[in-house]
Image (cartoon, rainbow, N blue to C red; front, side, top):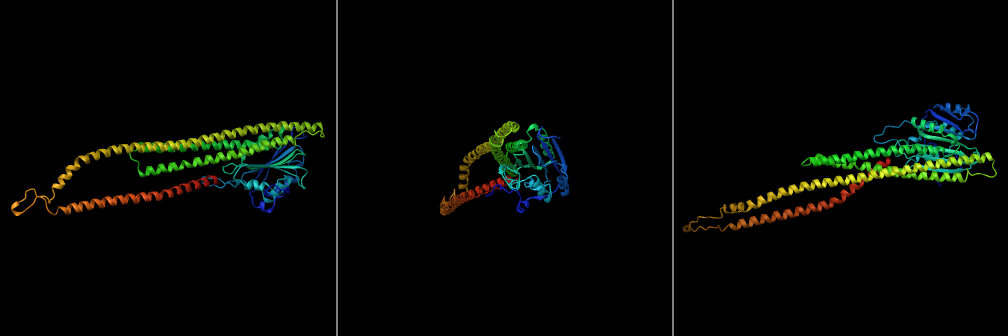
Length: 467
């Protein structure tokens, strides 16, 4: 089965899924307030080379990494993204800011589990998982947390945490941190007060960062929606202001209508992404209750100091849970905004089509009135024209000479009747066949147009998901 193995070591296959681009990284060490002597916080920058990391571990720049009641965090620098038109690099987190030997050493010292490879490379949706491990090469019980945001939008990050309940110690790596994100995380960690040892403190920070990103994405989607609505309105105003729409204006209007599909698809995809992230937050809330009922539960066999510390952690867990529930409500609000925009763009499109139909109907009414005038004039002049034409023909002799046997009507007038009647029948039959053939072609083209529309919709949907 594809699950987290008890053996945390990463195989060569998973190691090959990463790309190594060494860069300097910040390492933050935070002690539980009052738990140890010495400074509560320590932050250092480790160079990009393999020797810098080896020297940092050998010289114990981070102090005793096996000490208890503290946390040790690496803020992995985000690699430079390749410029992609109308998109972003979705596999940016697989570019680690370490060399391969340094990464192997970090995984050993920070007890990073093999499942982080799957976490980083499966980037289509947000994910949160936790697994309980009892490997032989680690001290006692360990809980491995993996969390990442969706790479469908820029600014995705990932987090891996290994927590040892017996030592109240966690090791963590934040992947994909730019300068602003790294400063934000470091600031939050330095101000977490007495919550350092709680295993969900970093996951709470992760949720805060993702909340800010989603709010920004929803706001940008709303602006794109307003731009699409303005485009539809401007197209209809151009159609309304011009007496007769030119082919160029018509093609521009259809182009604007097709562009209105993109904001709808992006907002729909964003709403689904927020819903998926909400599901992961609900899993975090459930796990917070699990921690309070298991690892943070008071033990009659433990000392008073230990039970008091566990009680403190339970209170902190309750605060983290409350904040996660607040973020869940924010997710609901952002989804409602997305739905409002989706309903709005559908309404705007319907109103645009209604307005266009009203303009067409108004112009058709004007044309119909003009055709009535033309038909009336034709009805007035047609009888007189027919009579004048008929009696001007040489088939009639209005002053016949009876002595010479001349008659008023030529005996060959039947030729006129035959030719006129035949041409009239040919014209009517040709017109009937033309209309029938045109109707048949129109019926044959309807399925192909529908298929083309469906294909275009699928391609646009796939393109938005790839972005």
